Amino acid sequence: MSIKEHGLLYWVVVGVLALLVASPFLSRVLVYPRTEFFTELWILDANHRAEKYSFNIVRNQNYTVYLGVGNHLGYCAYYMVQVKFRNQTQPAPTSFGPIESRLPSSLPSLFNMTVFVADEQVLEIPITFSFNYTWDEQFSKVELLGLRLNGVWLNISDCKLSWDADKQVFRGFLFFELWLYNADTNSFKYHGRFVGLWFNMTLSV
Amino acid sequence: MFCIVCFGLVVLFGGWDLRFRFCFILLFVLVFPFVGLSTPCFGANGEDALSVISDVEGRIVVCYRAVAEADRAGANVSSLLRVLNEACWLLSRAKLAYSQGDFGTAVAYANECRSMLDGFVDEADGLRRDAEAAAHWDFMVNFVGSAVGAICIVAGGYALWVFLKRREEITERV
Image (cartoon, rainbow over all chains, first blue to last red; front, side, top):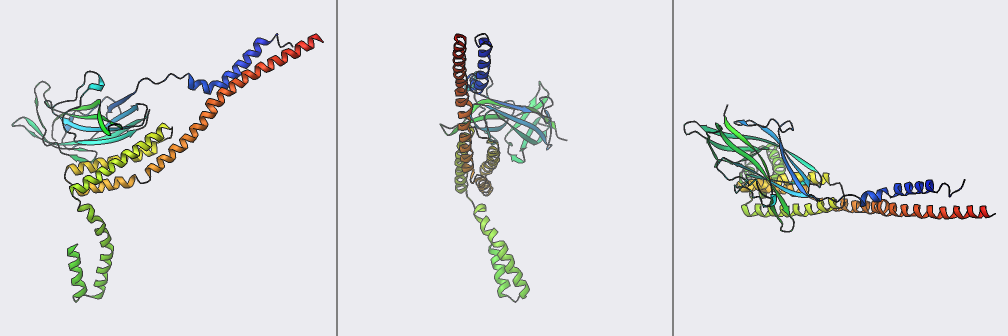
């Protein structure tokens, strides 16, 4: 058997062997670098689906939603979720334009939850809440007395809901703004994202 | 506290039964340490509460930096993050209590949070060091070793090829 006659086969075998041994090296070198760094924020219903969100809120009854934060920033992130509540006339966070230049609602935060999420990880926070409110039929308004969120009573007594003639409901918006810790300034900066749910508060039974 | 002491003086120097005196002393010994310990917490003012909360906030940032470095080094930090998230929940409760003027509760939550973070940075640093050692080993084997191994195979293949070719030429000449 001549080596010259089987030269092609010989070099193919050597090449395949070399590629096999080099595969761990190549898998690191030939990986396309990450170019998009972002955070996901979502809210799911009690069944972990985006289907049956609570809308008609009965006074003092518990409702559960799941707030999810997915970190794709390339580092372990330190987030703050600000819980806020507003009626139709109070200021909302901006929803349009580049995400970096969006602004949070100017309303004060009712409660701040700070969470840490490792890179490429997801954190889901179960949120159980209930509202205590009174419905003043004579003046056609709903006066909110308190919001109980994960066992903590929050004061929202300065918020009143007026009648929405178009939708035929008293609408209130519970929303969660996402803020991100900036190590350089040692402070939290609005991360341009929020999620929330509109509620109708006329069922006091 | 004052009432307990007054009652105790009455019991001890009054005409009370010896057994009753003994019970009171026992009760005093058992209750006093708890009353003594909890007094600073319930007697906290706004400045104390703010100071404790700020201190805990600073600690959380230090812990976060240690975890972030461990995460960057490739360590599995999920258990550390669980502890940190629980501590943060307590800190949030402390801040809420502070904003509502309930300084005693705020200090209690902040202290609980602080105790959760004891030894946290050391643990994170330990994980980071382990991860760095593992990453170094992984780099040497899978990156350097793999590249050098592939080069050796090609070079060895070439050397063997030259050797076999020469041997074949010598055999042909003979």
